[in-house]
Image (cartoon, rainbow over all chains, first blue to last red; front, top):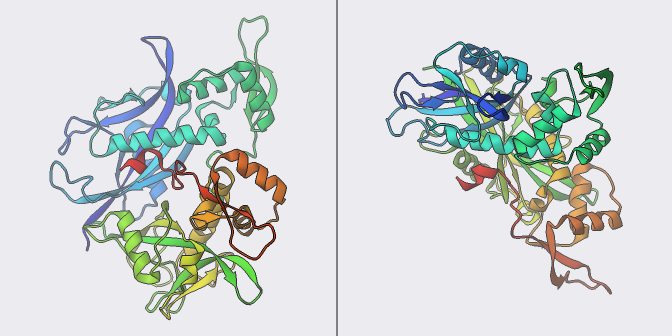
Length: 229
Length: 229
């Protein structure tokens, strides 16, 4: 036996309204560690891979166990395996973590988490994190922003139907910049990733905005040949 | 102990001239297995992760040990962890493979491999492969083709300097379609990924073609925050 342990950790992102300043921000649930090493620090949800469990199943199970969330998008991100990533500052076994990332819709994220040791944090300004989890979060944020530029991943943050203003808000919050509404509308309409439902957003407005939905053909987590497995 | 073993495998791609039909094709070195399971079948180069070895170091070491190749591009691809991927048809321990992919320049690939159990094969028509390695190769090919569309990864197949015709050939061989030379030139020149060296290809031609090089700023294996580790 080589004595290397295998775990799965998951970075979970959702758009959440911050009641303190009436802003929408990118949030991320974290788990407070109740034992050494890093006791009391925050960490990504996760746990060891069971002998009879596929990696994606470990991701789903630990995600439900810690946060009770079921994601609309779950994809393998990267495997972190530096020799001493789990054995400093307190000596311990070597742990290789297969990291997944998940995107959750706002109505899921608003439900709240009924566990005193689990809480939402701002993805951009997380508290001090255990192990190499700060690097993992940095990398996940970078991948999310990069992938927003060339894929339809932004739709994973929204419900079944949404307005173009809601879709634009996802881009604005994640990319942290303001986008011109008219340009955005042109780009989205020409990309073919969404289609109008024929319905309008319910509300008291004089001209209610159109609702859109994802095109059925667009697979958000496009893994090519792996999708068929 | 959970009894799960960790290995690294690497999919290596290079453009190679096929002497039989005077064509250039995408090649991939494979290793013939000399023991059960799958004795006699071809497999990806790789091996177990040593206790004191980072994952990338295992990839580099096993790559040198089996093929003596040192890649210009080496990146983590995906971690394959299905429960029974290594225990069928012959029962054995569970193995999780962190798979890397490497791109090698033609002059490296032409040097040949001095091992009877290692040989280049056509990436598109590989022989029957051990374990789930056929799925891994399919996935690596899909990632290569997808990534060619939005990054400068094609340059990793070429030497320090190259003509636009050589760069176009990389795209044509990997994507398996013919590209219009004038359109290709316009796209490459406007992308900013290459710059003219001021030199010309040496040869007997009346109008020798210009040589280009990669722009220093373009990092071929762009892993964002991970690149700084």
